[in-house]
Length: 370
Image 1 (spheres, rainbow, N blue to C red):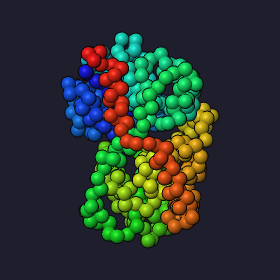
Image 2 (spheres, helix red, strand yellow):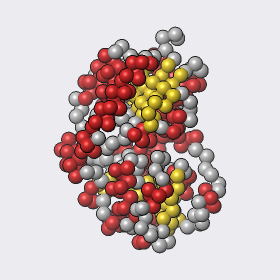
Image 3 (cartoon, helix red, strand yellow):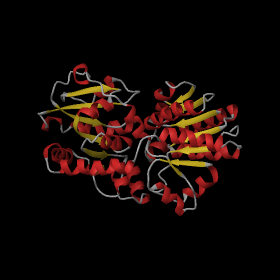
């Protein structure tokens, strides 16, 4: 079968690559064309556009970059029509992908959606559109099955692909030596993979470094940025920078400060106590607060349906609050409680195998030669 995949950010690239790897096992004749990143490219096929040119976050940022986004969408539609895949596999990235789904459906192309848009968070009526334009939905959060059922849509729960990625990980025994980290306790800083996130969150994260003289702070850098780009924020702070070794860092870290997103769940799966931070544009956040009807923003708290990790959002994302919360999880009583909660979370998440399950279901639903 010919697969066309669209992933618009780092986490989608990761899940897309794992899915491609699983599809090659299920379907040795598989061909791939995709919007994605380095990880998907490493699996073969044709990379049409890199997600680094596409990832814009927040309402105002999207509006400011609208001409670029519309141009990307126009080119994507033309490329899909020119190549007419057997199935279009959309990975998260809903602002872009739901429009592409509508276009593909109108042009008689089968549409699978892997990793549901967070329709349960705001504007739930979008489910009605999804029912019309998506042939099969593969969900990675346990509560999404019941949510969709309420709207009369049957979806498949495949487990969470982060469990696959963690299973594939084998620790580098020389990680500390290679990065000159010594034996000091490490605090991981994960400021996100988008430019706007990094520029808003990294200075706040770095502001507490001098308050923790006994720990070494290490920034996990995102692909697509240079060391010089990150170092402009350091301003003399005693920080190390690593590229492409986030799991090794989490495997060694005592605690972490993490940008809200997929990384919060990754950090929890490595059982690293964390403080979750988020800052958006003022207008974007104001709009989000009016529209979003969820109690939490971090995946850890959403899956557990209660507060496990502290979320410092917008005006709460300050030096004083980050320091207080970080101290509590480095050597305070909150640390033990968080680790106990993580054990429950791991049970809830179940076993790995999301990529394999999704690949098998794609074959079952879309491979007409079966």
